[in-house]
Image (cartoon, rainbow, N blue to C red; front, side, top):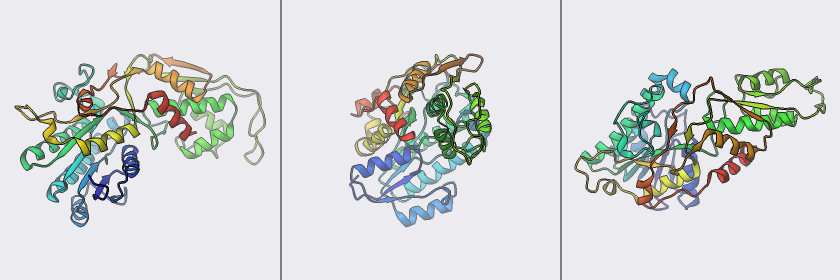
Length: 376
């Protein structure tokens, strides 16, 4: 890509898309086109076709997708498979029809079998059964990989698929109902620290920014505490009301003893990559890795996607303690062993990406410090 190349970034306002945009701008790229959601519907074939015909982008980053946690994936199975396949079909096919020079498709580590050997290599795709809860989403992403691969084989396109590990960073989802493990830990520890210090101004600010089940910073202290308790942020009631009236100043009170309850044993291992590293890897692959580089010596052309991660994981228990230290929460962590742990390990093998010359730069503690500074 040249700095003046016309770049279409689908999903530019999401976690990954916004990071790719920041990375591109920092490198001097300046010619972008967008399709803002929800005003622009990429599941609509004609709308997408009209956009490509009008704009004629040279390079495409396909970071747009319908995403969610375990509950959303399992509840809205039809929507997840339909909407994601529609978006992919429309953007990838129109990229072919309009002679896009190169496309980068973003998938997910959930494409790999639930019992895949660790670390997970690209060649493990479609070797056994997927995790049931997010199977429709995973199948949609696998379809995207195979669509890129098949168009490359039949039409000579240069469409590359990359599979990220667990990501975190600016723009993450801190909704206690729907967030993934790392943003949930950050928010719970932050609210726990605020409770320890009886900092109700900060608690109300947090609830105004991210309401919980309809409760925001304007609700009563008791209503907010009920929601905190529901999500495992527990403190004994203070000896007197801190906010007898929302119109009066907060009264002082002694520090509280706060405990945070987390699901499972804390023993499962997870890998985490800062989204700024992910964005840098995407731009690197777009500039440095072509489909031909991924098929050298192959008899049957398959599994040509690229894993993106740091290649290291840690126990959730260790992660919780790191977040606790970074945030400054001093209370107790309680592990509810009656709750499920989930898959024991999900670690990406990133040797292929390293072979092509890219490696992550942001360490986990450094990344968490940056993220918490931005969050708080």
